[in-house]
Length: 470
Image (tube, rainbow, N blue to C red; front, side, top):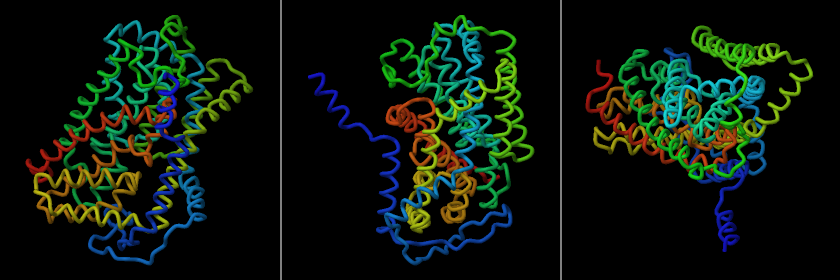
């Protein structure tokens, strides 16, 4: 009977993540044969310098269904289009792996275990959620957090939780940072420029929204973490080999001398430099990759490692993150198929049509639903802003809403769903934490549901209070 139940369980399991992404690519390819091709006219927005869709110009274009051979080409094109992200993740992860190998984080966990005991250890969740969220909210860090996922996963495991909790601290923190962004230049800045509202307008309410969502997420994550701490068999990854082997016994007596502290100092200084560079000089992946390499090499020198040792550790880091990098390329292939079939604008246009039928108080929620669905097709925040805001901003005028409400719906829909949609970063983040994507979805979807309801309430509040009117 036990074998039979096990076979049934396996029968209803999700396919390998590569297979799942490929299935989505095939489905999108089929849709290019079903949905009508269409496009908006594009024009350069003088406020932002970006090419955006022109509202009211949607028109049919020549059908360009994607064939099987072209579909496979789109997968290759997806890897090419996402190459900057892929290579950044390779370099940054391998550099962080150097720092992990130093044992500095084991020493840090040992120190944390002495400060936070028993149930008090759960305090690290709201602390780090807030820190990660603040950086994402202000300077737009998201993919830049990827290399830190195994670090937080290890800390969470050593504190008696599991790798899911560690992954969630980074994923949910970054997602809420984008959702409640006060001044994120890549999303809010672009959207406000296109919507022609004053930059940084509505910052106070967006900060309020961010804090509310952080509070809700902290309660939900802490409840799960405490359940796992009390009974490890309640963990969604109980019995799974996540690759996170850090345990409380292993780290309680871990050395935390001058070398380990210097490595953590290098990490802290590196993060400060990254934040300053992004905010002041607009650094992106090339500069950030260089900073991460400097951090890794300096940490290796502090530990007294030779050239061969450093190279072998980098090799191990490249190998460990290869699967996550493959996911990035495959996920981008989905976007390539939709673009090749000229159906992205079609989806945007037909999603926008029903919004005018909703009551004013619920129209903001309808916008949120649309933007969340749209983020499946266009996971790029700035790309989604350039496509949807030219339609959503004038639509908000017709509905009697302030344009800041449309911007708020955009950032809510763009931020949090990135950690749920397979076209976003769900599989990538789960993979870097050693968590099976189906286990991650089982964990994150209920949390996403509660946070989505929270966002809906905040949207209604924004509408009834005239958010953005002053």
